[in-house]
Image: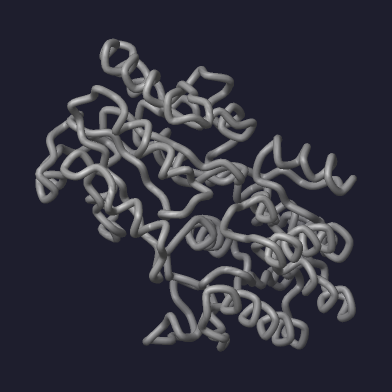
Length: 382
């Protein structure tokens, strides 16, 4: 009987997220879903973490090795300083492949290149167009995104439309690997009672209270509508912010701000029981909150962008409004008159995930990418 030659595990280092198991946003969920699956497949994974976020600092959790790196704790510098120091550390490590999140880390691709370590970067969205980055910040993100296409061995985009944009803007090819979601079914509506809500008595927004997500436009359009339902806004910003405060002062008892909902069961219940999910994100590719809305069976009303058209498959799994409050008002008033059509959207939304947004398939794609970067075949067990 032929025996297979034993190989040591592939070693992958992940930089540019807040860390593991700290689940805060899309990148951290990505680390949890993909890295846990990679470990189950025998890949050696190391995740670099923001030291100040972790009171307890075990060296390993669920088979994932953890390195805690300091940073300058400000809104604009925490990620950059953490990534810079993490890059220095990883270059002297035994990692076979360096995977980096966030296009802001584009310039740091010089380090693995100098040390001969294969590298890939997930560039996320059109950061240089986001309202929160103005002037120098926007110029930096565009510069960093362009540099990422020059310094890393592979650029990963998370949607077909973002892949096209990187070709249009930078003449740079990329590997498209989408984000994933786990389908989930309702288990009752008791958890929404803590906010005084009943099934289908509200519309839902999930996301940070920042201009990028057009939450002000959604609130304005909703308040102009004749709907008797509430608008529930899940999310906040982790710092004092005039825009977020202005949002909270609008609308009286027609609006309900929950803040961050860290209980995942309660968050799922809010998705499951809403009459419609309103999505105003404009500058990203595959958006995690929208995927969750699909996976949790929501009727989705989304801003008409090329990314949202892609995710909802040109209107098959949701409806669109234009970037005007009156456009949303009209769509909401239509939605109020067709409850049977809203019910059909809810019943079929999970079908919109398909293979493209399946975490196992996403992990397959990343494993193939990592192994190809360091010329390692996917091993087959004896």
